Image (tube, rainbow, N blue to C red; front, side, top):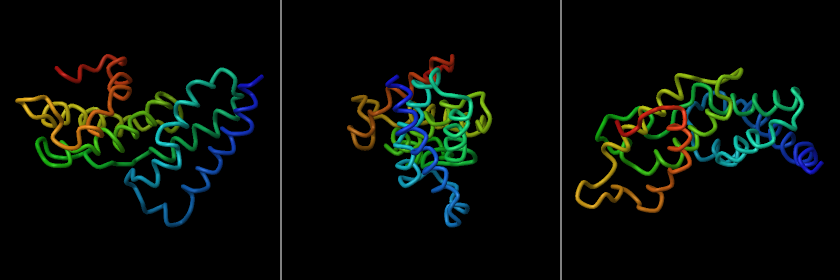
Length: 168
């Protein structure tokens, strides 16, 4: 089927390449989720593909992709993840961008081997800080970069679908 072709020709080679990239010696000391890590998993493209094509993947193929996502996310932090409530990092567009992408990649393997529940809990706390302190009270506009500051709907939907009241 077409799904099998995508899995064999694109997904598995991409996940394997990502895993090799993470295993490079210089990456062993880097624990922050930066643009270069984000790019290797296609922001959250690999996570979405894993979710969409999961029914057509073999268990061995799932393990390859899951390992790449787990290595990319386990123990990582991102700008805004552990900021003080009204501090710059808690209100900046980095929460929506890099930390938001980390959120989606974590949720792709939720409950599976390699899932980092603490990193996800930290992401949820960061989203609460951002939604509480990251907007001008008068206009409702984000404090930083209106475009980047609003690229959050899919990330917030993924969290709230799990019963997390972000605006409570």
